[in-house]
Every structure is written in C-alpha cells, then in structure tokens.
Image (cartoon, rainbow, N blue to C red; front, top):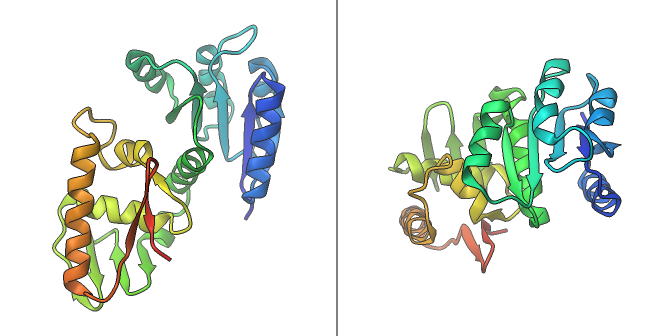
Length: 224
C-alpha cells in the first residue's frame, strides 16, 4: 500500500522539491505551508509527517502535540538549528526524528523508511535476505553462505540497517542515530572499526564475495 507523507514547510521551493522527491520514490504527498494548515489537513490517510521547525505563526514545537493528538503517526522535524538540547526537547514533545538542514535526499529517505517500518507490521521484517546472507531480527542471528556468524550487538544492528535499505546509501548520520541510538560515543573511527570487523566476518564466511561498499564522504550500502 502506498504511504502518504504530510509535508509542513512554509518555503514553497523546498515544499515543491520535497513533493517531487517523495513522489519519485513512490509516496503520496499532502502539502501544508503553516502549522495551522498542517493540523487541519492531517487525517487518517497520513502515515508520516515532515515538519519544518521554523514556521510562521505557531512554531513547530507548538503544533507537534496537536498533530500527535489528532492522529499519532511518526513526525520527523527539519531545521537548520544544530543545538543538541533543542533536539532533546523536541523528542520530549513527541517528535520521532530530527534532520538538520541542509540534508542529503538519501538520508532523508532512509530516515523516512526507518520510521515507517517502525510503525508497520514487524513480522514481515523479521527475516531479511541479501544474496546469501540471511538475518533473523527476532532471533538476533545472521548466516552467510550457510555459515552462522558471530556478531556483536552493534555489528548485527549495522548489518540489519544496511540490509533493510539494500537500494539506498545509509549515511553516517543515519547509522549513528539508528545503531548507536543518538549516543555521543559514535564517531567516524568507531564506525570504521565496526564496518571493518563486519566485512572481515562476511569474508570469512564467503571469501569470494564483497557485500558492503563505501560511498565516500556519505556512508555505506550493500554492494549490488
């Protein structure tokens, strides 16, 4: 079933760009240009809301609660504000994720997919397959080339994220927020070490294959 995204963004150029981006990636869209309008058009057909924080009239912070009370779906906030405390405050108000402007389209799409998955039928996502890798999320296990892999919690979460997005690049920001759950301990060196260990364990199972490729300056993806 096609998912519907409600875009609440007062900049018409950004709103139009997002509408085109989402439609090209298989989503339906509803557009609003103020918080008040966003609450009015929000309905049971909406699966996710992309909300600009700096809106005319009522601010984004003020309308998150109204949106959630009317129809509780994931809300991803966008803003040029980098203040970590502001992000924490937004989560306490009910926001589900936060994307700093300017953002990569791939990162935004990956975050949207992750939030939509969280609210969908989890059973359909328990078994993931990519080539000869099989990951069982409910049993916290993974096999490659028929061989059981011994993965740490982070390594398994990292492999799961990549396999859940086989056709997209997972940006470093998305990986940090998903695998490390917004912890400050995650950095480029930590991520590189985990990727290296994961590649090594996959290579031990199947020396003839390469499964993970680096997209320089952006992140990682499964190799087609």
